[in-house]
Length: 213
Image 1: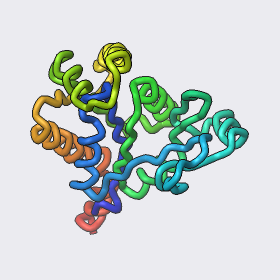
Image 2: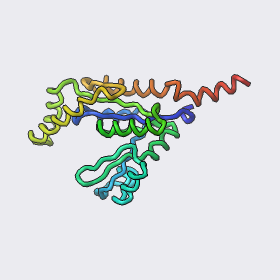
Image 3: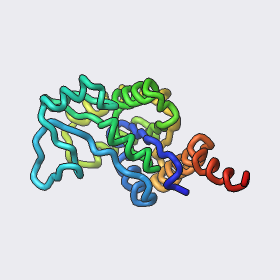
Image 4: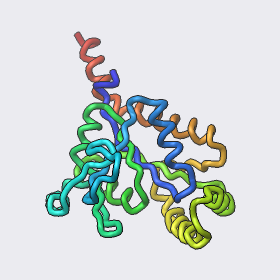
């Protein structure tokens, strides 16, 4: 039945330190129908990175042509390199009944929703915002990594404030106070969304054809 059911794009956004990556990894480990969207980039591969696994590596000219042709659901320039989410690759996943996980910020999420809505795929995206329980806890988590200076942490906290201001644009909000509870909440969202009648329609239509005979 899952092969007949249409998938959806699962957008996850959060400020740095809220636990988004941990939750995404847990979801993919718990559900083999969840696949991570592999971004396209113009930067060169780093040692150990494989094309199609870590990123899809493209030349700048090729990337810019794809932008002009509207082949990205979202894209951005970061420190002189381009990064984008291929519309075709996401669509392929949806047609296979997969839940395509997009780990992107609020700006990327806005682009994805807008482009999918304009292409007639308004029902094919679900967005979840992962929030920390408080500003203090977020700061403590960032400091607890012991990888950043206080200056870098201050910049991350400022970026977090900007990210948090867009929580109202998302379909769901998970406050990651207790990791196990947050994991269960994310799984519950996915389970409920995949059972929506709009996604179950192909399965039910096929079933009803049997009943009508």
